Length: 172
Image: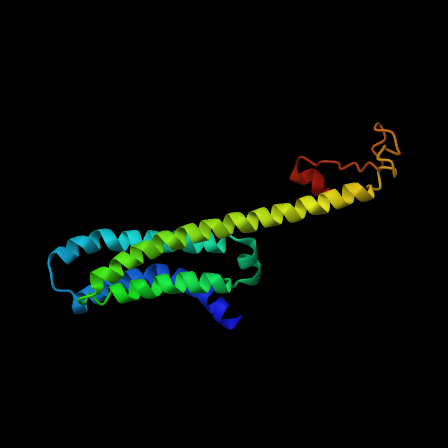
């Protein structure tokens, strides 16, 4: 649970740290002038993509409740983050890791969307099952056969709340 909670916090920090790593890595390991032009496009896209995926993961009710991501989230997002780190070294295999990081971004985005939809559908199904169970039992306002036991004109208890419009009236 500690690793999953740490990764929950890391995914938000990664939206800033990993694009900065791409800039620092180019400053340390980069060699071509065209790389600067590429970084002008890559770093904002990386920032936005990392942030959107982190928000999609955090939007799931189970993740919010536990403040921890699932192990599958750790695997998918961890692999993607490692690919971004590897691309920041700009060595002979830098372009390979950059392409793999882009494929990882697409995969992580659709994975996060899929999990959000799947978890939402599961929660809706659980709510509908509970509703169907309550209907099958019969609510207190219905008899066993499903017909209402009291007239629809009877509202039961009525609470009257008087509104005070001015401050002076309330104090007096």
